[in-house]
Length: 147
Figure 1: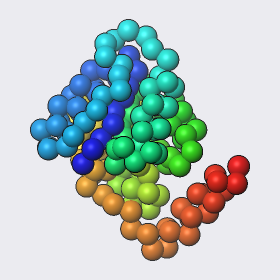
Figure 2: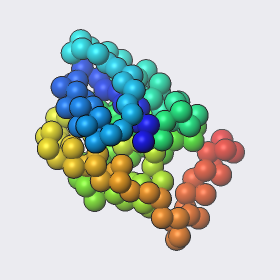
Figure 3: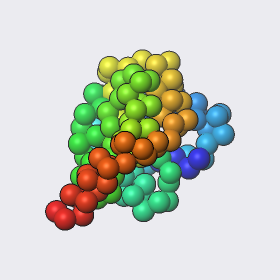
């Protein structure tokens, strides 16, 4: 799977751990930064990842910041993107299976590295079920296209 990832300075170390983990799992990864622990305006990174995922260049995106909140808000500003903040494996699975989320965000100040690996693994292993969730996702998409 082709995966785009990015982070701010608060999550730089966690991003490196996850990057190594998903490469070892056989995924192709592009890192959109940040590339050190210096302060950065995280919306720019979230926008870049989300735009590439929306274009179909990448199948999934992973974004990390202190809480996961700012990255989720930013990524969701990109048309066609459904980004979900996840701090447990159940939410990560449901983000994909029920909401067809293409991006998850994780807070490095909230989630430790081992749990983050499990969250990412669950998200990457899950696919959209459609079914009773399909009309909900369709409604979200239709609303977004009108506005």
